[in-house]
Length: 334
Image (cartoon, rainbow, N blue to C red):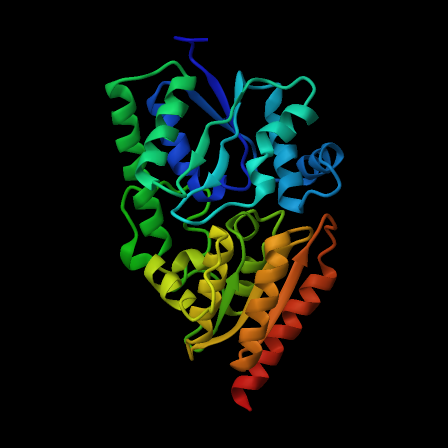
């Protein structure tokens, strides 16, 4: 398929919420037409649940739905095999196996670009190999790859900066960015007041920013008068420094990010409480969630654990959030 203008499908799920801007910019710079699946809806979730194995966690099932939606509309799917995205840390094995799981589940299945990303030992070499692998799959090489990489890096770092507070917002971040700009700490959006309760909402990016899958919990907290702080609003240094309190380093990249954000926010006197979103069936979350709750209990910081599954009824969730916010208000005035 060399020299063809690819219609490349990118599922709007899982690590799209971490690297979507990089991927889109890179492939578009190489001449591909990038097709991103629509935001999660009931149809996509049901499609994914019907295709995925029962043991898969909810976000993986939703990923199946996005991939299936794209399958008949694109020439190929981009499903990277993410082993590690940083030194000495790893990604969940279920996510590593996504390309193989999709080939078995989608009938017919378009070609899948499953470039392996493994930065565990030599990050720079691993990243260079992954970039060359992605470009090679489109039949592109040479200086065009370097230019595409530079453009992707520029947009990605601007997007990251925009997530860490308005003072660092980059001018060229697009409004339709998949994650940034939705719930920024310190923003003037929503029902806020000078004495609004500051609430840390922690969890995986693909739960926090997927408003259907995550039931828009950050948005609900804002509507209840809370000022939301997310892990992406913190710097890497703040998260990593907080993680040093742990007796042993967590080797799951996302688990360490969630735990570091939780520990950092627990130390902030102006943070009234924490809400932790987890997905049913997530193995690492079962450990990280329990660990975060224990640390919160020791420090007297209110902590609410919310586990999401395929059910879409919101009445019970709304009641729990309202009760939590009411408790925080009473606690502040006691």
